[in-house]
Image 1 (spheres, rainbow, N blue to C red):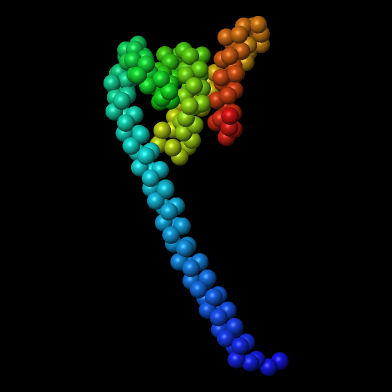
Image 2 (cartoon, helix red, strand yellow):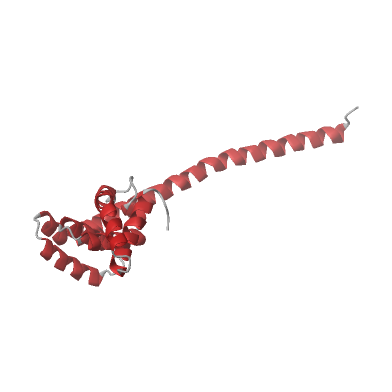
Length: 177
């Protein structure tokens, strides 16, 4: 087959089009990477800002908790929870306080409310993670709660407590809601 002048012009235009498309494709890749990196940075900054706010907001409660003044810590926590009712951190702190007071039913219920509002408290990589405390509570109390429920099957409080522990166990195992 013989190529005339028109065929050569078409081949050259086709080659230029392919090179142009390839150039734009390679140029667009770094932009997408930069967008992903900036989103990750924004997410990290938001997480750090949130953690700083939580530390500042709950500082009096943490101080009372560290000094083992559990009743005072619960009172301060209730004041904060009135102002910020949908904040998961308050429920998680309440669960920790009740766990230290060995009120396991209340601790499990508070942890469930906190985890349902924000699953980061179960996540191993999260800065907010309270996984070891929640795991300890579940491992320590689930067998006792199951036995208590079997002995008094009609008791709705025992059923709810066991359901809370099973929910936490499921979330610790990687389950979702």
